[in-house]
Image 1 (cartoon, one colour):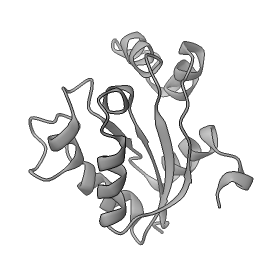
Image 2: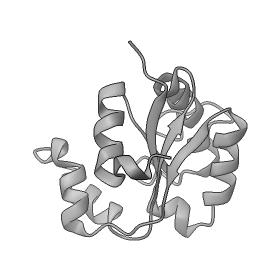
Image 3: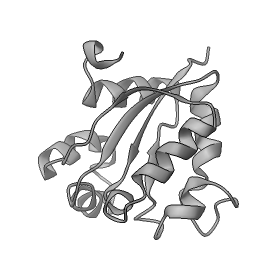
Length: 139
């Protein structure tokens, strides 16, 4: 059964480019309620733990380097059908293939620097949210 929460984070490129505000505005305009939000800078070790599922993939090290290269903004969002609706809002991982109006089409630099992360399942949303937020922080 789908839950009504998902996890996202604005990635270092979008934060550095000053797109955090417009991205957050677009998320809220799409009907998502922000349950938890913070600005953090991951160490390479923390990025490695977050992306441990990809440890055997060839892009793992560059992903960890990228995600620890600057501040990120993790968030927990709430809305009916949150995971699926949010994936539609952010668009394809490759911004060149993303639909017009999606966050990645508007703000991503490239496939690797794609502005924003969105959980791909209810289970992963819960795991990813717990990495950044305690139960107490989920207001």
